[in-house]
Image (cartoon, rainbow over all chains, first blue to last red):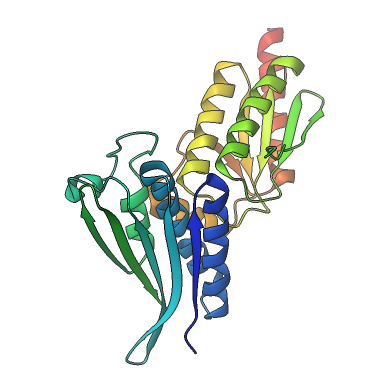
Length: 133
Length: 128
């Protein structure tokens, strides 16, 4: 049974709502408490990035399957200014504003797969996945 | 919308704040301001921040806690962080936020004992 939930990010309150939504789904999908925390923390970082850099955007979480593996997918989309140099923002410690240069590389470390697409002036889409052991 | 205020309790020279709900960014910043003001008002020598109830500490809150410890230190107060859940400790380190300069204890009881030892040592030093 496919599940999908979306949170709209407009304020810092929505960051908490998005990560709670992700944690609840991770729990429902059978992830253990440590993976639940990793997933919720990654969503918190990504949702904050949307709030800080794009202002608004969406975070969607859904269950996924690949062969016999089951997991969770997080899709973060915004129509913000985009990221001119993705390699740069994926470096630890790089930050342009109120971020602390830990958001994107940190979220990547917490997840199993991490894919980022961005176009200047059009927005950013990040898709990341965590597989259940 | 009003920010959620975290209650800050005083026992002797020590302040205790137990964070029981997920903090959004604005209420976390409010907590920092309230706590520093309370250190000033009460001349507290130590602060215990108990995070037992938190299941997520992201980089924003982690950074804020490190800031609070540094700022309280400038005001002469030690900060001990207590009650970090295993999952929170793991995600903080994986995020790259190890809080190297923040004192920690397993739980509130051990945190209080640690704080009392430190404040006693300081008052002994002062008597010499």
